[in-house]
Length: 302
Image (tube, rainbow, N blue to C red; front, side, top):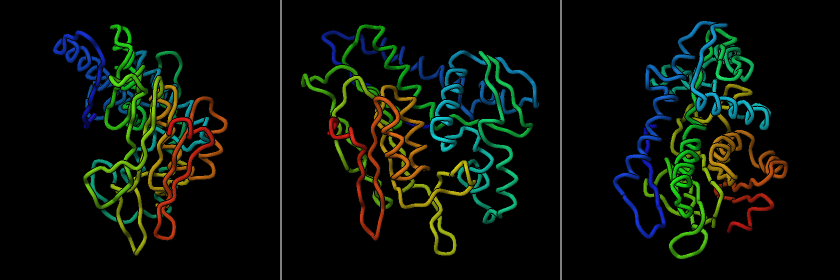
């Protein structure tokens, strides 16, 4: 997944080496199934298939793809795992930007993206457009967190904290016999040393953060961020610098954090009122100042 992970477990006795091996095996399996960098992964088998060619995938891959479609529907298309062509066009993928994208090229690539370009039926995935390519990097880390949480719970470790690439699930209580305290990073495009912007108290909940303050470029005096709006094909405006979403599972939190970056402040706050057990914090850059916005129920976690 190109990132690090950290697991904290509260336990009287623990075979650290055996547990480490089990956790690594669980993460390696997800990476093998869903990585865009593993040639034999389910994702790459789908991407290299022909239109209308049914591809049988692992149940775990099917679960992530189905949930991706659910979040796409929930967010009115603000979350989309078929954005790879546009991400590449804007120079945020595997190659650098060669020339500033033209409107006609963006319109053409928009026909290759969107939930209607592929279907999932059971364990069968079918491309409905010959050029569609999938990338689950905006949801798979959250899913990996959930699967490690599931593993630890199965082994009887009721109190633990799982973090993969900044996405977190907090189960039970910490060694201090209180809810886990999780720091949310302050958006700072200059500093490479993370600073805590806000601390949330979690038990039986996940939190994921998405930001646009580290990966961007300037063109003719305007900033273009790496988060592309699936509805327009253009990078989102830079005024929302980060979003943190709390949810019952990390897969949902991960995907919704990305979607809320696209939706902006007002639409995101409205969305949180409609989604059970979900809250968010948005940081907005306005007139040279950072403004923090909280959904109505976020206060119970602060």
